[in-house]
Image (tube, rainbow, N blue to C red; front, side):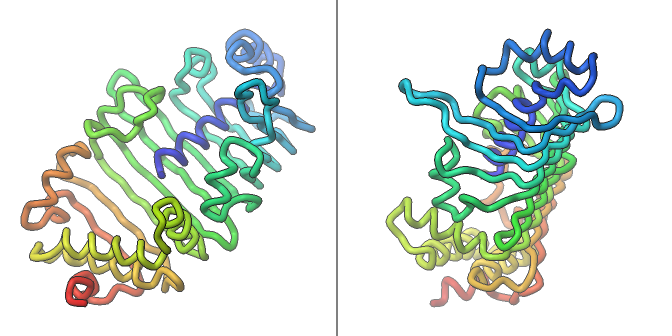
Length: 302
């Protein structure tokens, strides 16, 4: 889900950057490098203005979905204000923008568009979010640094992600987080305001289960995975299990961090789950104000 979120914000940034024309240089680069990459009729906006030396601002933006099966494109995203501070113009033209620093205010996923069904399922349809993305990708070293991926949806929740990943072969790869990608560092913080409950409900609907049943299954998975493990792993498990148990009314934000001694691939992490104290080995920690000691073990005792 995080990879999908990163990709959707990145796609919006890369797509929208092509319509600025805030300065002659920007317009020339758009016409020369970007216009051929943008499908005609995919975007409308009411106002554009410069932002600093290289950036620009678009206001009252509509992004349309891709036309499929002869059906006309439908409005997919509405953005009240898009601020592009910097972006890799030439990389975009080649199909892979290596850096971007953008902020979208009043971003709404519309039910009629390509994100509509998913937005409706998870209770996001029609809700306005503010999002910020700041990343840089070094293709030579295959390192992706996400300085900020922040999404705030009033009444739903607040998420903040920071990460440094190794062995990212390409941003074009739809499997951005595959088994060979290695983590240098990772931090995810989430403050819930009803969103997690709606997420459980949406996933449960897809699998013919209630959100309560799904929550118990996730708690059981945490309990089984941490059973008999070392102290640090148990501390992480108790924080996650406590948050899951409180999913109807969380007692504060949950934060997970990882800083392994050396970059570790997702595939290697799966194998390390069977070791005595994987959280200690991987430099993993988790905090939650409502953490209860023994919460993970208590699930298995029911």
